[in-house]
Image (cartoon, rainbow, N blue to C red; front, side):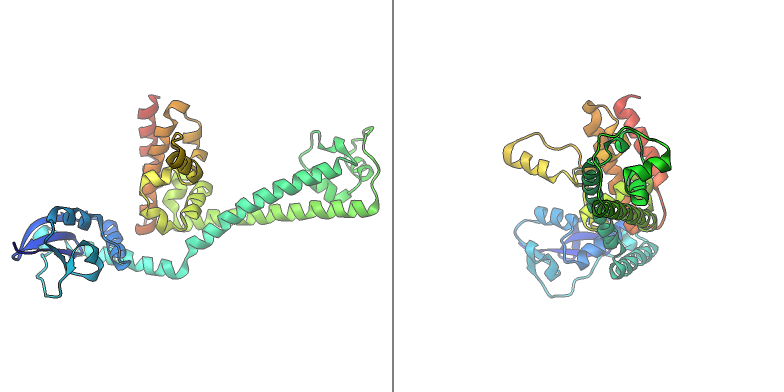
Length: 335
């Protein structure tokens, strides 16, 4: 029995025997899809089309490159490759795929999405720090003026500017018979300093949020339109980069951020998680519990498409995906 050879061109994977194609897996006629496969090949990955053909070829399979060596023995002889024209593939598709692939090289050199990920992580850390310090300031300052916290939202600013209870009452005109104890100059200075630090952290957090919003509009406009910059940024940050998010199946995107629940499911048989970060999306968290999993799955499917559009494409398709999502959710909920 003669060997069957597995070869891959830019437009598909083929099984060849005696110079004739006996089976094939043609790639989608989309520049983005072809660019994705070219990038995976450059990274030494084996394509799903190649795995499918290898499983059908039997034990006599040989392959045409070292990259495919896990699937069969490598041969070094020249093999005549199929012609793209014979399979109705235009060279214009390849040219556009090469342009997209070139953009990937530029993106790698900039790594702006990795900076985005760090900014998102920093915002999370700042939120936690600000909350802890604000609660600490509240507990501490309540020893002196507990009534200040009843109905005001500008507490930090008042403490930073005036410090003690008497000065705040004179500034606001709100005098009360306080149950708090007097405060010394040293404690007053320390509390003013703490309030000032928290305010500075808030300003810095706002700067980071602006950076995330602007960067998301730049590198992931489709995701931003679909999910908003905050959720989209968290998904990219958790995935590690826009590229990694674009490579993920929708089922993985659906549970990003719920890894602990997933591990408990695998180890202890607890119910599997139905959503992770995407629970933040209003379409998900406002849906009824009995359909929330289906809504989360629908959103994850659109995010998977959006990430590929942003990574490989050149235009914002967020409005179209959003309309499709709304239509799908209406079908799920019956509303």
